[in-house]
Each structure stands twice: as structure tokens, then as C-alpha cells.
Amino acid sequence: MSLIEIKVPDIGDFKEVEVIELLVKPGDTVKAEQSLITVESDKASMEIPSSHAGVVKELKIKIGDKVAEGSLMLILEASENAAAPVAVAAAPAAVSAAAPAPAAATASASVAAAPAAIAAPVPAASSSLNQPGQKSHASPSIRKFARELGVDLSRVKGSGPKGRVILEDVHGFVKGVMQNDSAVAGTAVATGAGLSGAGLSLLPWPSLDFSKFGATELLPLSRIKKISGPNLHRNWVMIPHVTQFDEADITELEEFRKSSNDALAKSGVKLTMLAFVIKSSVAALKKFPAFNASLDANGENLILKQYYNIGFAADTPNGLVVPVIKNADQKGIADIAREMGELSAQARDGKLKPADMQGASFTISSLGGIGGTAFTPIINAPEVAILGLSKASIKPVWDGKQFAPRLMMPLSLSYDHRVIDGAMGARFTVYLADVLADMRKTLL
Image (cartoon, rainbow, N blue to C red; front, side, top):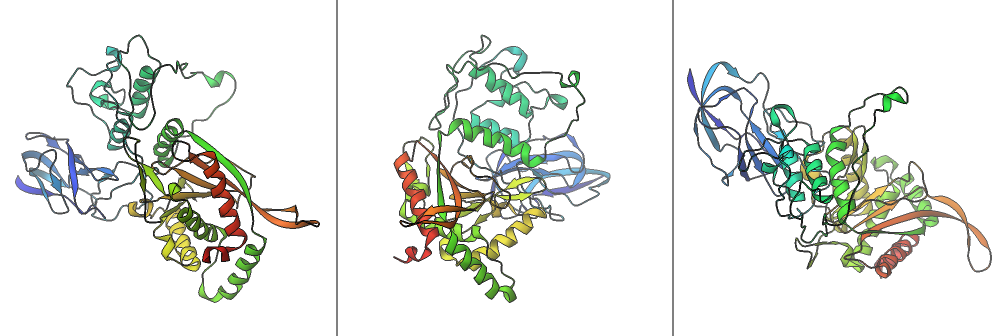
């Protein structure tokens, strides 16, 4: 037997994180790679595992402490063959396309981060509750989701292995509150987010044995979809969406794009229409700053952002992720196109870092390469708007004398109606379409 100091491994881009949970105590026997503590930054949470097996002799940290790479967590009395067989990495708490680095802890960022809704704890029937004060067991991603909905996990009875709280348990608890079930006393209140369970009277989710109708196959959702699904659900329910549809004449812009690509062929840079739209969107955001903003936690103030970080949805084999072009206002279209290509390649290979998907102030989702004429993109909270692009097509457009064939690209702008009214939404798409029709207008 030997005493070993267990320290915080490499935690990526995070310089210092807060300890939010101690998963072991002195006297506990732990296995190699077993989670010891949970830490959280402003964007992600993660579990830090043990590099060795043994018995915990002494904890060197407490809840609320700030730790960084190399911080001493605990003293372990190691057992024989105690070392982990592989390099230990922090267990990700939310979605990330980043590949684990050897001998390093990796933090994970959720696909769509949002300010937490604050709710009063609601007691429910004993069948769905732990005893008061009883410790709940849940992954960091479930804890984060519960905090965003204002759910006290100590009151939720887990149905997972060893009583672990899973996503369905949180959903069931919230559903009971929103239905005002007789077994639930109290009211869920969300400040700033506009969510209230009173009066919705939702019917139970239908539960059917589909196999009696025909053959079925069970296909597990990808990790990205499992995490992004609750975020999308929250955003759709809690944000009053309005979608403004318009079209942009990109006839001349497309010709310029093609000719520019011919000139840039040797440089390896390929200009895409999305790169032009990102640059044009920056001009529109500067003219209409309310679109480059977020509501504060109380829903009483608008936080106007002086930076222009544009997220773009990238399709990967495991689902959509949203890399971010930082400071797009300071970059040329060729630079934006180059960075988009690099980030898209990393996304497909699962090598995006958490920092690559954080800090967006506005998001664009482009389906132009696939097809369609219009759609209603879901706002990526805490942003207040998202732009959708569909496939451009040749249409006859009246020029005052005759109909002329023009290449028209559909625009679908979803916005938070608490922040943006219909008139401003229409002005934004009209201005954006004007810029796309003639980008020289951005020089005025």
C-alpha cells in the first residue's frame, strides 16, 4: 500500500473551475476512472475521475473551492494494480464534438447554452421523490438541465441504475408540476423566462406498444441529440417565437462568388454563399443591435453585445453542432470562409473544442445545400434571433418593365417576440436582403 496524491488533470481551456459536488468521502473505496468530484465553469460542468484505485484517506477540497490543473483533490491509499489502464479524462457533462486528449480532462459545452430558469421547489408524490435532504445521484448534464428548469433533484426519485436520476425522471417531475396533478402541491415559477405550469392541463404522453401494429426497430439517439433535444424543447417552450420570411436577390452575388473562387483556386480557399451571408448579417446586426443581444436573468434588461460572434449549424454524422466564427466583423469574407471550412472539418471528425462552440451572439442555419423553400429555426438561447437559409432558385421577378430571371434565396428569421416586434423583424430581413443584393451598401 502507498499514499498517492490525486490532482486535477488538464481541464482544457478552463483556467479555474468551481467544485460543485463531492462524489466520495474519506473511507470510500474507489476504482480507477471512478468520478471523484464535479466541477463547473460558466459554460460547462464535468466530473473529474481518479487515476488510481484505492481508499480515500483525506479530502483536500470542499464544495465551493476553485481548482485548476494540478490542484490537489485528495490523498488515496492505493491498492495493487491501482493505476488506470488508460489515460484518464474528465467525464463530459454536456455535448461536445471534441475528441478526448490523452492524459487530459476535457470539458464539454452544451449545443445550446441558456440562462437558468429559477423555480421554487415543488413537493410531489412520494413515488417520485427522495426523502427530504437525501442526496440525489445524477450526471452533470442532468444536474445542469434540472437547474435550468428550477428542479430540486433531491426531491426527484431516480429510476436509473442504483437510483440514479435520469432525463425521464426530471421530465416526469416537471410534467407533474405543469399538469397541476393532485399529488403535486405548489406552483413552478420561472422568472424572466415566462414559464408557468398553471393552466396548461397537458395530457399524458401517449404510451403505445408499436410492435402490435407491425415490425419495429429500436435506434438509440446519438449523444448530441440526447443533449440538444432538451435544450431545443426548452427554447421552443420558453421563447415566444415569430418567424419572418423573405427572399434575397443573390444573382450578382453568386456570379461574384464564382468568379472569385476561380481567382482564389490556387490559394485553397473556397468561398461559400454562407460566408457572404455571415458578413452581411454583421452589417444588419450593427444596424439593428437588438438582434445582437440577450435578455438578462430577470427579463427586465437587454444586454447589447459589442462583439459579433456568428454561430453556424454544421451537419455531422452524429447530428448538428454549432461552431462559432469569433469577431466576424473584423474578418474578410475569405478569412471567414477559410475558418468555416476548418471548423466544419473538425466538427465532422469530432475534434471541435468546447471553446469553438461558445460565445455566439447570432446563429445562422443553412439548408441551402439540401433543399427546401422555408422553415422555422429554433432560437439558440440565450440569443434572441436565428437566421435560416434555404435553397436558392431562379424565379421571374418584375423589374418595372418586364419579368427577368433572378436567383432568389429564401430567408427565415426567427426572433424572440419579447425583444423584437414584427416591424423590426421585417426591417431586418429587408435590409439583409438589400445588402445581399449589393454588398457595396455596407460601405455607406
